[in-house]
Amino acid sequence: MYLPRPLKLLLFALTVWLPLYMVAFVALIMVGAPRSEAGFQTLMLVHGATMIVEVGLMIFYIVHVFKARTVASDKRALWGIALFCGAPIAMPVYFFAHVWPEPKEWAIDNVVR
Image (cartoon, rainbow, N blue to C red; front, top):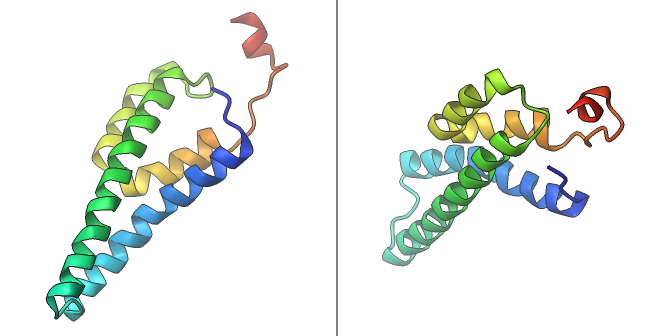
């Protein structure tokens, strides 16, 4: 599945945002930062937007797992489960393993298939 470089960079930024936000959210709640109602509403707005981004990324990555030729057929179900259950950790790993590298157009595997 071919993705242009600018789309990959946007995907990278959104993918890295999830684990960073997870750590920041837990730290904010532990410290008790949102003391005012406006601060709490802002935090919940950012949290809701992050959850929407996470669902969108999860859909993209699961579709990518089953359409990409770079993922071995015996590992597709394993990647699908990992992306669904451990999204903030599995998504960056999958991104660097299967999305970021450019596809090799003249590879023997692609010619034979």
